[in-house]
Length: 252
Ligand code: FPP
Image 1 (cartoon, rainbow, N blue to C red):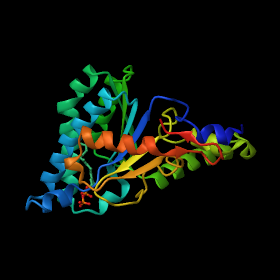
Image 2 (image 1 turned 120 degrees about the horizontal axis):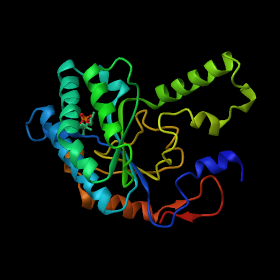
Image 3 (image 1 turned 90 degrees about the vertical axis):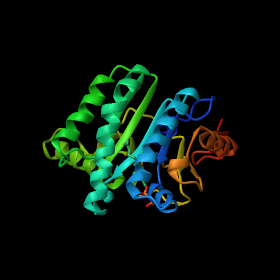
Image 4 (image 1 turned 120 degrees about the vertical axis):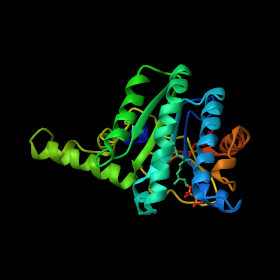
């Protein structure tokens, strides 16, 4: 098998269900609007859903959970909403870090740190440092994250190595570029779930999700719970994964 074929199979050689879930936690605003509540309340309830889902992920033996918590494009939202989302991240880390650590969760952060407020960077670093040795579940927080930007950052680092004479351009292939992404050691997602009925990737993990199974669920993120996660897993289990080949590899 070629190197490229090996790399797209990352995370797939297991017989015990999906190991890496990626979540686009969409619909907080619509959940709130439907109840006549401010959007901030939808985001706050979204954090509660996130807590439930992290617990459920533990219980279901999921090893990696990547969440889209603030996209590089979310800067186009009103400043007050950006402030709310940053406030929620601050509170999430301050309030939940000890519990996550106790439960063996390792927090990883992907996305662009440059330009973020110093206190946010410190909190993200603190979460990563404290939980560095935990092995039960990797919680990968995509914050100020965009997939195109991540790939461009990787390309820039490679270009710099070439310009400095440290790398021969002929050695660059998909596997090498993949090693320059933000969390190259995390296997690619087996299952990517987006809530609220929208059916697009929105610049999330476009490289890593090349062979992920996509499941779109109609409910808004604040209503997402363990039962919804189990339903998505059941849908995943019905899929056949062929990774570009002819031989079906059942999803679970
Ligand atoms: C999409 O809903 C959701 C977001 C832009 C942010 C998701 C954030 C959280 C669940 C909480 C923060 C996370 C952490 C880790 C503290 P939307 O606002 O786009 O909803 P809409 O499409 O209905 O308007």
